[in-house]
Length: 596
Image (cartoon, rainbow, N blue to C red; front, side, top):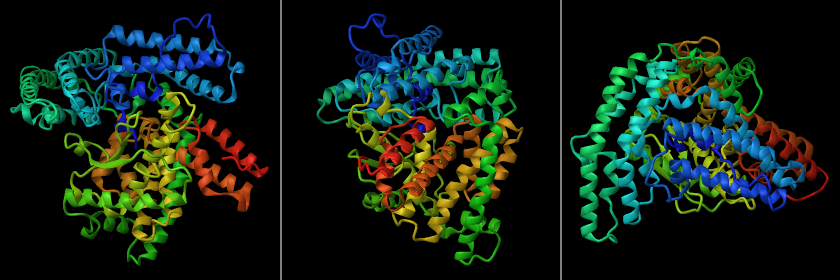
């Protein structure tokens, strides 16, 4: 999954990449293509300027001394800029553009239209979730460079701004309470412990202080000491008191107003909001009922394949008993976080040399395997991917959850690594950064159905790479496929059909061997992020459908490496756009055109 790559205050910015007006578009001195490129360049710059966290995650250091301004005036200005930008884009004559630029125009139009439509739901009034929020702001240190004294001074400036950031979020949360736009209580009950983790007695125990434990020796000793002294002072005098106030506010003024229900449809305008989210994340017009039905069909199909593996390994018991065996037998678990991390790294190295079997173009950007920070590990998912810097100055990272290794089974590790690292998210994102002649918003774009659809499709590429020789690894692949099928059922069940949280947990446990720790965190994720989890299976099914269609049309001329390269050649796009591209690619191949 990619969601932990998203800065906590900039979800909509990265998903839809907030844009701005471009002065002078009314009378451009150049052709439509040049005007469009100038528009894209201005949009990119504005997105970085107004979302400093996005700039940081992209590897741009210019705004590392600040947080996103979440004042009412700034929010209103960004929303107006979205509306103005859409009108400016529509004023550019699409028909006067070359074919590639038309695709760029179409993708940006889709994003902008969704950004404008999204405004009515006032998501900014709910800035806290159990997966992240102002209480986890310090996690951004994971991607900051800390190469010279300026990097540390920038971080100190951000640290000094933490109290103002928390004040802005508290103001938004008060407005959310007044409007009835509040998260479910069952999720908010996880937050006090996350806030408390920031209220430390020793400043050096703060996550904010971590970078000051490893200041490069190239910085003079006296300056290193001065930076460390200032960091300790800011943490003790500013950050800790601010988080203490935030914790008191949360317990006294916010948590009591959290809603007892879990369905997003219980929010004001909630039914329209869920329909919007489902459509946006899947990039389709599928209805809640249609998605639910697809999920039920997939669950039935995958259960039948799981039964075959159960019989193959000679397990004496039904599928429910087999699931319990997979969840509890000590042979399936590592006995320490260190051993678990070492095993993840070994699997990643096993995968790397097999990539030549499924792709011709191998991206250059490397990736590493890191533990998920302890501050969020108990409340988050099994793993996630964080993209590298746009300029290649920072590699991608595959983050793995080492909390309670006794609930992290070995049999899931291969499928998980294929999804999050290569040939999944890292492969896809690094490949996109290398696409020539595309504007930056295309090379860094992220449509969930495409991105997560590819990640789930990549899990099945393990068969083509010869990596599922162990039947328990195959069971892991099926378990992960089932996980995404179950999502279609429980997400739509909770948000569209009145399912309870426990009903969703029970359905998940009955159909997948994932451990209860993972299942509960997953269900809570779907409650806090409605619709997002629908995109994985819908995207995978579309890519698999396109592959089957191309194989049927091309017969012996079909080459999996070329097909996968063609899927990745578009960068992240809506599924309908991908389908048009692959159908055209298949038609050219059928006519004997060897071009990829």
